[in-house]
Image (cartoon, rainbow, N blue to C red; front, side, top):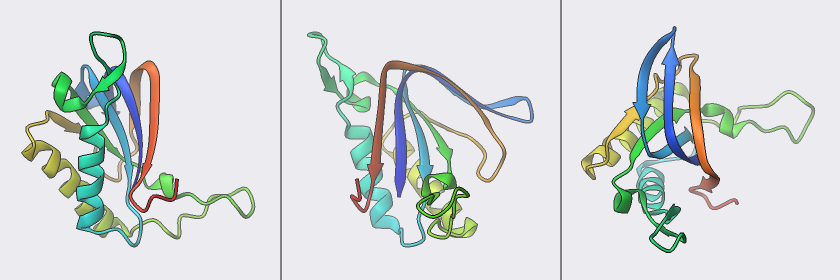
Length: 149
């Protein structure tokens, strides 16, 4: 799994001009599922993301996690995180999971965050979405469950 995580003051996602997910202070997570991903990847990503110490403490140091600040999550499915442009200029998505597997693992990710008591909003899997965010910092982190970067 791959994720682009942005620390936000607020974020929302719209489908067909209707807001389907909206959060205040927290993390916007663009989540991509790869063809070799499984539930262990989901567990790794959830634990890593909710535990990231990227919120300021009383000394203005990035030392607090999403759980510490009681922040919210907005999780957006994004298979394009597996776009490979090493050859040519048109991305190849051959290493992204098929939609059925992608949806299943995406939904497990969301379910697991909610089980941890984190207020989690989502977009609509497979839909064309407009994402609006106010990146706070700015802080943007990349994570790959296979630790390729």
